[in-house]
Amino acid sequence: MTVWIFRRLIQAVFVMLAMTVIVFVGVNVIGDPVEILISPDADQAERIRAIAALGLDKPLWEQYLRFLWGAVRGDLGRSFVFNEPALQLISQRMPATLELAVTAVLLAVVLGIPLGLLAGLYPHSLFGRLAMAGSILGFSLPSFWVGLMFIMIFAVQLGWLPSTGRGATVTVFGIPWSFLTRDGLAHMAMPAFNLALGNIALVLRLTRSGVRENMPMDYVRFARAKGLSPQRVVFVHVLKNIMIPVVTVLGLQFGSTVAFAVVTESVFAWPGMGKLIIDSINVLDRPVIVAYLMMIVLMFVTINLIVDLLYTVLDPRVRIGGAE
Amino acid sequence: MSATVQREITPFRRFAADYASNKIAVVALIGVVIIVFLALFANLIAPQNPYDLAQLDIMDGRLPPGAKSPAGWTYWLGTDDQGRDMFSGILYGLRISLGVGFGSAATAGVIGSALGLIAAYAGGWVETAIMRLVDLQLSFPAILVALMILAFLGKGVMNVMLALVIVEWARYARTARAAALVERRREYVEAAECLALPQWRVLFRHILPNCMPPLIVIGAIQVASAILLEATLSFLGLGVPITEPSLGLLIANGYQYMLSGKYWISFYPGLALLVTIVCLNLVADQLRDVLNPRLQR
Image 1 (cartoon, each protein chain N blue to C red):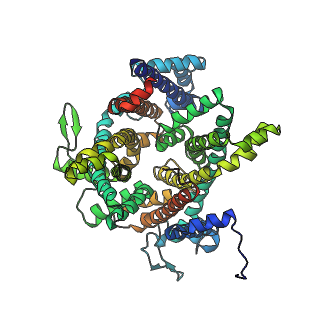
Image 2 (image 1 turned 90 degrees about the vertical axis):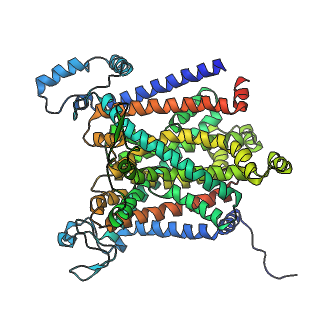
């Protein structure tokens, strides 16, 4: 077990290293580093001085080591636009994105699991078939277009919800949060639900197929024969067995949700790091782009690691299989 | 004894009959055919060439659906801010969306399947290298990989296609390898090898045709997801340039007019996109059921 964790850790470090190479090559070989790292207003003498100062006249491997050393110390350059350390900019915007993504995943659990249970228990009913058709729609709908339609209906036509921005926030531990105020919640409703749509469809399908797989099993028949109430069989016995795949997929899905928040944040002008990265790409503020990519890769590697570890804790079969 | 001639049941007829067992899937297939037809002949069907500035009148800008133009014909889906007929704009946009979607899915299919087959057949370090790359790539979501590539390359139709190919090849490679690992143990492969046929011939002429069913299914799914991803990237302003607007860019153009209630500039291109994706997904679903009942999404 310890050996396995250790091996998995080393693997994560290697993935991280591979990604730094890709991002470094992307910025320094495919793009022009002089244009990327030096302000376009600089004159010729300034450019040469800056090239020497940034070490761009050194061989590529040496430049890469410098970049890596900077990244380890949390120094990924300064933004041209904001003239602030890029990493600091990203971390300032991160809570807004995480707040949105966590809410979206919670919505997926709260709505997806009950709907999936019902659809699985009554697969041939009208509701069961509607839920399946709806979930296909959930995968097919262009999420950014749905966001626009939400704004159209709920903000413009009905005037129920504010269309853009984060609303009033409350500062806790030095970080502003929206979910603690009524206004903030109103601002969050549409983007969070928009971001959750795909996840709801996914959880619904997973839960439904889990229920259908588990219901004919011996342990369910035994629990029934023991005289347990149908509610207890479904909510305690079956649900427990369905939760392992649902939790795993949701854990992995959390990273995708954060990445996909780029789209939702652009539609609803939610001031998170996704909106920052799109703005930065449009004005070629590359230090911020590099910082965003490194942060999100780090997040992904960490999430994959945690899900793998949790999986071994939750499901003993994986642990035994891994030991062989 | 009946005198009727027994019709021969060819594999294609059996396949067609299996496919037709689901009426919704048949409707979806007809939908896909119509959409492809509309896109291919956009220049003949569209009442106006939306990118010929001589045909545009800025005074016609942002007219609601059903409004009449000064020339006397009707804008059934309204006009955008430049006075373009939305229906014509959507037809031309479909062309770019479908071109990018089918083109990148096909290119990724060829590259990914070839690498997957080679991985399965060669084994050893070649297989490890290819499959590790696949695992690495599939652990990141498609939108993030595409975003990263376009941040390096900048926008443009070719760059979007390249990004989509890089995003999509891994799934084909994984599917092709899984199918080829099963096939290569079969007798016909052994027979072909005994005939001392060259390896590439065994691989691509004997094994590949038997791996096609799952690859076709993945291909259909990938076309839909490529179109959706392209639309998303173009909406974000990272995809196609303004001179070649796909459906995603048309939707983005309508964004600023949404708040003043001019819904049609974003609504109709989005509807066209939605119908396209739903039809493609339904076709892919039925293909999966017919071609390979074991393969679950």
